[in-house]
Amino acid sequence: MKLHYKKLGKGEPVIILHGLYGSSDNWLSIGKELAKHYTVWLVDQRNHGRSPQSEDINYSLMINDLREFIDEHSIKNPVLAGHSMGGKTVMLYTLDQPSSVKKMIVIDIAPGSLAKKYFIAYHEMILNSMASLDLNNLKTYTEAEKELMYKLKDIRLVRFLLKSLKKNNNTRFRWAINISAILKGTLKLLASIEEYKRNNSSSNIPALFIRGSLSGYISDNDIPDIKRIFTNSIIEAIPDAGHWLHAEQPETLIRILLTFLNDQ
Image (cartoon, rainbow, N blue to C red):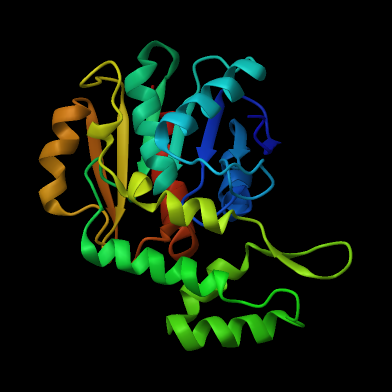
């Protein structure tokens, strides 16, 4: 699958993968800062952004997508960075292709399973709310925001989701993510990386895990698993940040990223 991307800057390569419901656009401001020192590749994963859509989505497929992308663009020894869903793709790729990765950065996701009743219900609620919008008769983004707020009650979440609501040439709205495929694949996307590991059980590649102090996606209980699987890893917490820490604390995130990237 040929993934859509943006390429910024010059220097050693850094590939950034967005999270669930997101796109490369979410990381453009971070990418521009890193591009002052590095070549930054901002990639849309399958069923997101401008990349092709497929009825299948799981980490095995996304690892293969990433491998094809790296081979197609002849990218040598990149630093791989991923947020949330993208972080799991990066973890699995690093375990599968350790000799081809220089460093790994995982942003606010742990290796373990999120397939708990709360998370499953939460994501099903989001996806069903998005699918319920009558796009044929929708007139404005304000109208879409009002309808989603009625169901989701979280303005930050709603405005994040609306970044994937686009207009066609005929001015009708469309979702830039494949809602039906993601809904069908929710359990696969919430699964532990243990269900997908194909080769190495651990990696000693330099790895940075960044978590938001207000987010529950990397808990203290996850740290032993992180250290067991990624034996050369460090963990940084960003104060006053939730799961979307690149939007909530961008300056702190950039500082942490550059410190790790510049450390030879």
